Length: 406
Image (cartoon, rainbow, N blue to C red; front, top):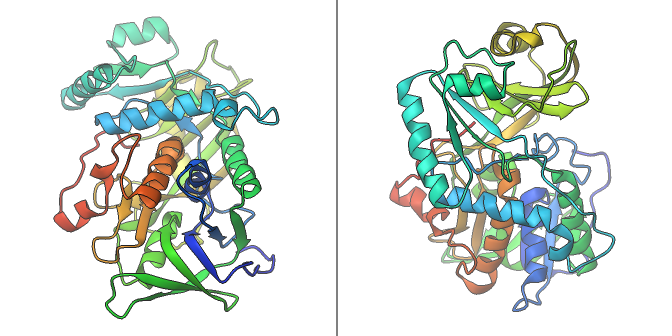
């Protein structure tokens, strides 16, 4: 945790307490301020307001529409609209920059017919939702992207419309700034206990690390990889754990002559364009255990034995490269079905979830924040029906099978 001192809240009671102030907590907080039917007090409790170790800071900041479920496609479509029209969504504030999406697209590569069929099926879902996904034979891939080695490739899938890099940090900054200006209170502190009613059906208060006991109407768990630590204070277990993901930035001795799509190699390694001869690659070890919440140490062997050999094989021009920076971040990994956990708990009625995004949270944050604000205020989703993601499916053991997880 940051060395900054903890901050005491200004009030002893809030309508909504949000545990976690990174991208999800801040999106929900901002969308609450947008809701004309809500004028309550909101407290965001963030354990480290430098955000240096959080998943939001370590993201690759990309978005895609290439999912296998329609709801995930539409969630990303709203994200694209939100990013491209950020100033309008922010009320036309001239201080808000105009953003765009660097549409280099995602290139999924299949090296067997089973995965090729998954790409074909997913394309149909995406096209029906209005996405521009195209399937490419190995010959077509080489024609458009001659730098790839496709000797083992059966099929590729790419969409270059509203799919690529976006400036997630600017959106995050403006959600926080605007939410504060509209009255949301952010403090650096930590929730250490949650008290429930005698019947166990409602949260009554949260206790902060600094000692204050805060009464609250509703609690939103937006704690990222630490989500289960927050839920357990309310006697609730959720299948979310921290999984380590490694990222490397590198310079190529011979840069490519065109944009590199965010390429998902059949091995699981992914890499993308950054610009000016710089590229970014990521992946994880074959053994992928839960890790300690503060474990961000690098593993050089993964680069030497897995990532670099894969890159150099897939794109021979990348045999001569130089790593310029590297880091490890955490996925808030939902071991149940790799999708978001949202909505209210089935028994603790005023405890809400915004957890378990398994690596695609940043691109989903606009729709997730909007939907969560609607659920908190109205008890239902009004813009886009997010109910398939509600916590209830965990209890009912009805997973959402999303086949496009990176």
